[in-house]
Image 1: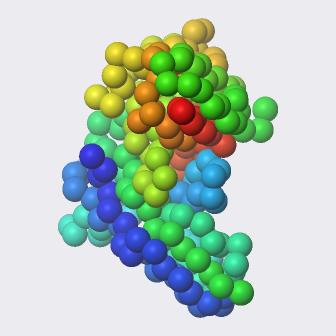
Image 2: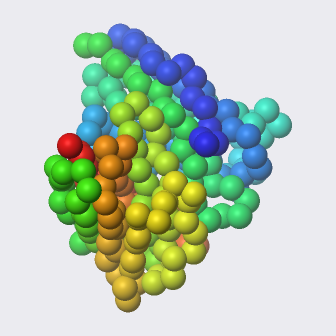
Amino acid sequence: SQQGEEDPQALSIQEGENATMNCSYKTSINNLQWYRQNSGRGLVHLILIRSNEREKHSGRLRVTLDTSKKSSSLLITASRAADTASYFCATDGTSGSRLTFGEGTQLTVNP
Amino acid sequence: DTGVSQDPRHKITKRGQNVTFRCDPISEHNRLYWYRQTLGQGPEFLTYFQNEAQLEKSRLLSDRFSAERPKGSFSTLEIQRTEQGDSAMYLCASSFTGTAGGGYTFGSGTRLTVV
């Protein structure tokens, strides 16, 4: 079964707007990662946030982590049409063996 | 070596046939993972290797599935007696343990269609 659940399942916005995606998980984690997947392609690692961190930035990406609520959010600012993709959160459990992925948010950025 | 390579990109096979996929990870990476992804879903873990040792297998990996990583380099995933339910994208990823702030590097996947 999937560890993470993304919300919303689908999001459609206009270019220039911000996009926020949420992820909830069930068990204790070492870290949480976000990945992007363009249609029919492999996943691309975007950002990793450790369990002792609360917020992290990378370019137009901002990730928050609330371990008390077992949730994370990914904010993409000033979105572009090229940001259209599926976004997945993935958790690395305390055993540190492998990632467990959520079901993803399909983001569409309209030009 | 700039990424994870998977071969073939697409495979169409008849039900009951055997298929084998290959993954070449980033050479410096000691961990290699296989995931399966169906349309509209997130990747589901199948198995992973650290060097040549297969350390974990998912319950999804039935006895028709076998994976190897001889010499801790490339890996193969074989599916015997394929079924229509095996149709999916098979993703390979690699990583290096001990890398601070690192994630997985995924290949482009092998899309399997069982007819």
